[in-house]
Amino acid sequence: MENLSGNIVALLQYLVPGFVVAWIFYGFTSHPKPSQFERIVQALVFTVIVRLIVEAERIAAEWIGNRFFVLASWSPNADLAAALLTSIVIGLGFALSANRDWMHAVARRFNLSSRSGDPNEHFAAFDMHRQKWVVLHLKDGTRLLGYPLRWPTDPSGGHYLLERVERSYVGEDDSEPEDLSMLAGMLVSAKDVKHVEFIKGESDDGTSSKAGTSTPCASKSPAR
Image (cartoon, rainbow, N blue to C red; front, side, top):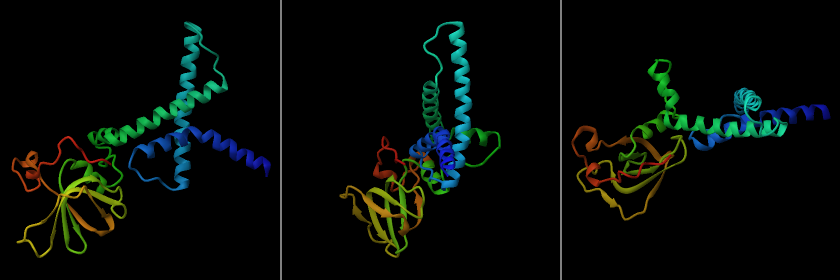
């Protein structure tokens, strides 16, 4: 039993670089965390990548030491430090690539995939239509026109944060919308939203819309 526990601890220590990469990736992106089994598999894959890079770093460091100068010997502590630093760099690189859609853009260019780096279609829609006003159609017939500051990763949960909100109701199209711009913001549960409309602005077709005339802040982009 003690031998089994020791093997488990050794395995977890070996997978630490992979867990660091996964922790950074999911901490800096909007992708939901997978199940525990999938996280272990991802940690194993990331660990193999990190170990290969660290081995290349060791070979390069020894070559530099033999050819030019020696800073220190490659000890187990140096190996651990190199693994952790490499894990951080790889995690940040994967997160940046996912947030900027770099890898998927290359895959789409060569017809290898049609997917994007966003976690789902809902998030991709908001990501594509940044700096555009939206209309939230609620299940009770209420319509909310506003500028989105935050939106949920998964439409089945979370909240939308709107500012400069106008509220109207289905069946009252002839009446003026209720101006709620005096509010600092409105938090709307995603569970109450039936569907979402994105309003075209002047930059889309050259014509101004009601939302376009409300002059949303061009310098403020919706946050993830």
